[in-house]
Length: 277
Image 1 (cartoon, helix red, strand yellow):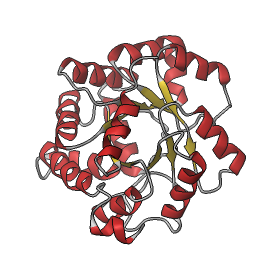
Image 2: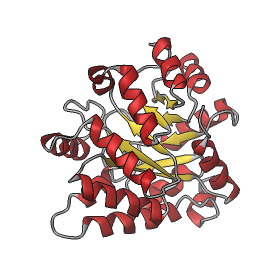
Image 3: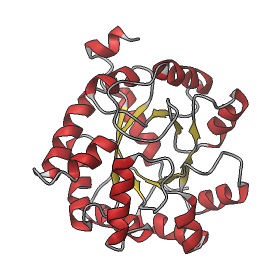
Image 4: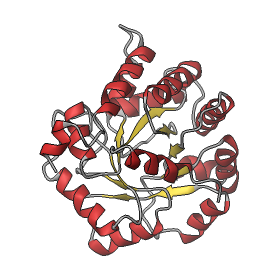
């Protein structure tokens, strides 16, 4: 296993009294060069971890913003190669933060699992999030991921049974990704009912063994602050992808501004976080 950049990122955030901020962007969107500049801007503005979306034609867990960005990237020849290229270019530029690739199984299987995982690892990717791979479904795949020096994160949802939560906690070598709602990704005006309580329950079950990250539907500082009070990390994606694709302004600058604003909300000493403990 390569150096645990993900573990170090969570440890550093914890020592600073905050949750880690994880920014999600789609590889190759709206163009490879703009995606690279936006990713660099996000890392420079305060993202502790970058989640790189692998463009896919049928992203069943993604809402309209990310799905449209994936299609746009694919129309330009994007796909797994776009994610590999983005990671490699970030590492060439000296990026030290963890890079997690979020990919459905199909792009990996279409390339050939061994070749796909090797390409991601070789580009400097630290781990994988695969929304359509249930924990324990394919132990051979999990062993192959580990054999390439990559870490893996499994998802849990409001209806995940306790025994399955325990499996995810035991098998996730990067972090457990809590989806605190039913449905797909996408910015929402408020957190799903019981979202913070779910994250807190999963964190309690973890007992500190595995970092707990909350994602899906998080769009503003208030929501980030509420979840940062109970999670080790918070993922924001759709609002960043939407800002990057806004043709009426400078998308890269908007991403930089949003990450800077939202990452501040991960500090647990902020009034909102303290009030919701």
